[in-house]
Structures are given as structure tokens and as C-alpha cells.
Image 1 (cartoon, rainbow, N blue to C red):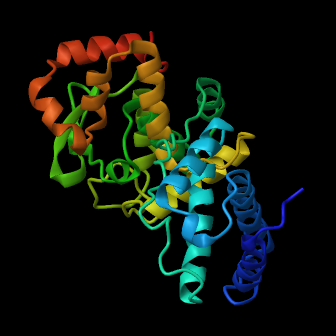
Image 2: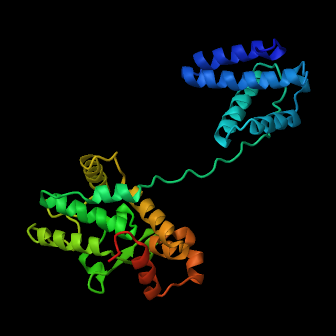
Image 3: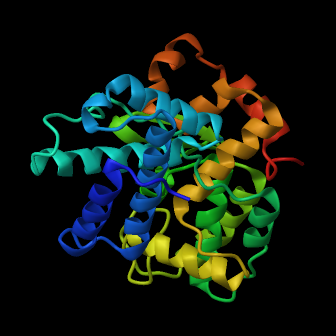
Length: 298
């Protein structure tokens, strides 16, 4: 039961305003209403009877109370946003001179973890049975992306001349025109060789590894669409290319715990400083890779 206070009438007017004037959805309006009624109840419990008694300390203690009640960071962000919007409305209508929530900063949400496929999902995806030359190409693309943790842009830009050491290594031109050398797992090598036989049948003058039926280099969009189609065919939800990169990194880390090798393999520009101190000789890199990658194991 909500106690009747000076604030309730204004909350009602504010909710009507955001619903009608701001045209917010019914769900959003209800969320705002619930958040502000919690603020109202908190103020009632503190026996606060007018707006001039609400200061930033009281606002902070309300947020602390929300934490005690096990609200997560995202929920608290929304509560603060609701309160800030409400007090902006009051200020605009000359009901308050300033907002006590003005300097209150919402907590940072924990970083959203990237979407990752389980090793079983990857296995299901890569059990794809090609029935056309396009399918053979697509399987090779997916094997390479998961095998070496490549970005989709890096994958479509692979040239035949980028392979080294009898195809066991690939020279990749990454973001910021930085080149790195990545190992290729045996499943990926096999899939590439199958594709190369088909590639010879296409009329082309390109050094690009992956071509379309007209002999042109593939686009990012076409890879996205083909991967989505392949996943659905394998009974999986739609998969986007970056999920393969995230999955590569996660599965490698779970198996090896060797973060530095993974940093090297992914070619993260934000980790370039670290790489100065952690130059890995390629023997170590191959050893960790062979021990850790689910599709490199002999």
C-alpha cells in the first residue's frame, strides 16, 4: 500500500506526460511508475514531507537501499534514470529549483559478455555436409574462422599468397594494417584443400582465396548470410561470424589458460602494448595451439 504523500500526484502527472507527450510504450511507463513509487515509499519511511528536504545524500541512500534489496546494476541504472527524468519534469514545471539527482551517477553495468557457441554447437555446425561447390567453400570459411579466430573482414581478404609453411600458417592483415601469423588447424587445412579443387573450376583472375560464382572476392555481407543459412540448416539458431571468433578465444582460454597466446592469435590492437613484452616464438605458439584447440588435436 502506497502512503499518500506530496509526491504521488506529481508522479501521476509525470507518467501521464511521458505516456502521452513523450509517447513512451506502456511497459516503459509502467517501469518508471514502479521505480518512482519505490522512491515515494522510501521518502515516506524517512518522514520526508516536501521536496526541499530531498538532497543528494538521501538520493544516494535510496540507491544504497536498492542495492541491499539485491537490485542489479542495470535495474539501479533504470531507477536513477526514472528519478532524473521525474525531477527534470518538476524543474521544468517550476515545482523544484534544482534536481537532487543531478550529480548522481549510475553504476556501470558489467561488460556484456560476447555470444559464444559451446564446443558441441561448433561441432554440430562443422558437421555440415556440403552438397555443392558453394557449400564446400562455406565450410572452408567457417573452419578457417573458428580454427584461427579471424574476423570476417580478415577472412574475405585472405589471398593464396598469404599461406606459409605448407599451409600450416596464415599471414593475416588485421586492423590498423598490422600483420600477424596464425596457425591453421588440420580440419581447416583439409577444408581449404577441398575448396581449392573447386576454386580451380571458376573463371577468375583473382588471388583471393574465397570467391563467389562469378570469380570475385566475397563480401562481408555474403559471408554473414551464408553462415546464417548454414547454422539454420544444422538446426542451430542464427550465427554471426564474430561468434566464431569469440568461441575460438573462449575455447582456447578454457583449454589452455594461456591468455598471452590468445592475445597474439587474435591480434587485438588494444593489446599491442602487451605484445611488446610478450613476443612469443612460434614454436611455443604452435605447441599451445596444438594442445588447446579442439580442432587441432591429432
